[in-house]
Image (cartoon, rainbow, N blue to C red):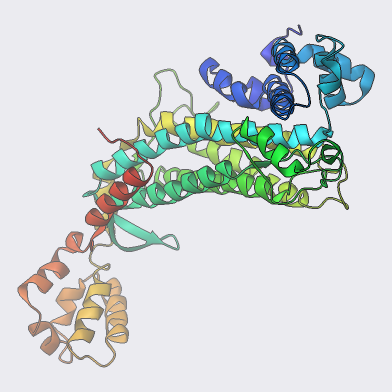
Length: 466
């Protein structure tokens, strides 16, 4: 058994971003090299079970091979591969060494390597989706839901193009990410459940299995049922690559949502904004030279991780191309898909930790809102003037805003002095005037929409809010 310090590893995923023991172990259950070999052995077992059901071999042979496959270890298979220069042949040899002469012929019977490789990957990514990926993302979603509901009435200035727009609430801003993440969770679940396998032989035409089965597609189904998989509608030596492409796309697009959220939270921590803050430990250091700094390192880390893994989607698109019935141009690149999953989950777990302690500075939110609260009533003012028949209300209010900025006045003060506008002002109702004098009330249905979004996704994804 190879034993070395985690700090001798090359990938930062191992020596830096997966140091938490419980996270590393949960990732490894599906995504480690050990897990990959385990799942490949499980496909070999499913194969021989189906052979026994079809009376090609005895049940005793199937039981013997299953026992042998369960005794394998990854180091043994890798040592064998040094001799064979072929990973699946090495796996097969290691199983055959443990079984009787009667059982040996039925290990890997009628199959090609990528019957095993593609099917094993489909099984482990499907199971990782249900047992790992969705659970972590739902934990993060729940925290965002709780923040959204807690801050649904916290008035915040909306921002478009980096400029103050019209009022929203902070809960409404977070509800955007509840919805986007909910959609991505749904997409990951769909794509993960739709991963397919194959037991169709060297070129996908069932050449070998047809020697023994009148209906080799039924035999393929029998094998895949043992693994809770369906067959691809067509295969060559490999499964149609679009299934795994859709799966990886769902992961990467979800990663983009996490990066977008992190970018928003990072900007809201700017010194001149200061509306949210990360929890800062007692001994934590923000800068090696500026002791006063408290950097938004967690949100920056998520964006940085996204920058690393998002471009790998291009590689996945390139892996859709395979010459004729198959070439080897995806054999190395496809091995890195687990890293994309770990990158996503590492960032999701980071956000779970930081968002569970998110600090909202209500005083700064109010201060920032007050900066331009007299100007943000320009929208309702122009719309109300138009509703009372003003022929060019937008231009009238635009000129009014310029004058207000120049004279440091309010729009409602100026409008009363404008002969052409005063008649429209006099027609406003008390409720409309209150809206213009108290712009914090101009939030539309932000609070109600926040509640609806949270309620919808909690029901769709079965997220229990205490």
